[in-house]
Length: 163
Image 1 (cartoon, rainbow, N blue to C red):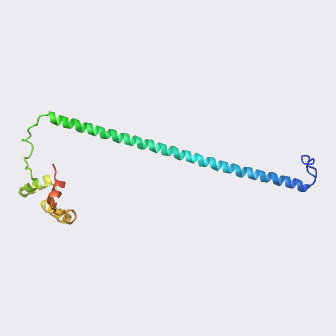
Image 2 (cartoon, rainbow, N blue to C red; image 1 turned 90 degrees about the vertical axis):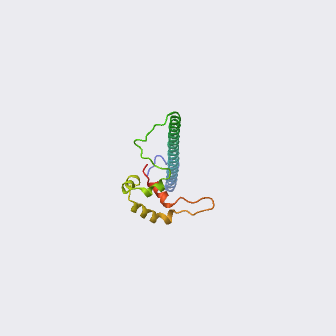
Image 3 (tube, one colour; image 1 turned 90 degrees about the horizontal axis):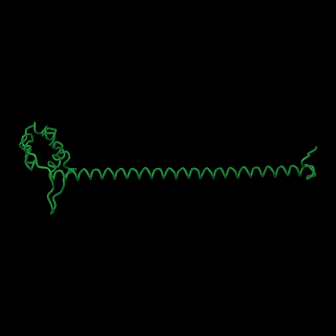
């Protein structure tokens, strides 16, 4: 058998096989090394993509904070101008179309008609009393040395009262 490429270096077939095995091992090592390089490159590519996503999310969060701050400043500005306008405007007499009410509405409800109940609280007096009875154990406060609590009926009436 004639190997023109190997005949100057090798004497027998065993040396040729040994040479080829060494070349195959080198090729295997090279492919394993390249696969590790590719894995490493993929790792860094994924890591860079994650960092880009984090930066993008931070920018979005920063924009949201800026927008919330702008909205807050706009609300403050509107409130300031409303207060300013109320201080400078003259009061308007609206007695013709406003129903006169006392300062203690809770005591005024004793004189209400069923129609007044539906207009102001949007329910009948029986329904209101039933809601008060059902919610009393959960929302009733204790009397302390510092203050007396607001009655349950008054708290619920304030909640439902239609101004």
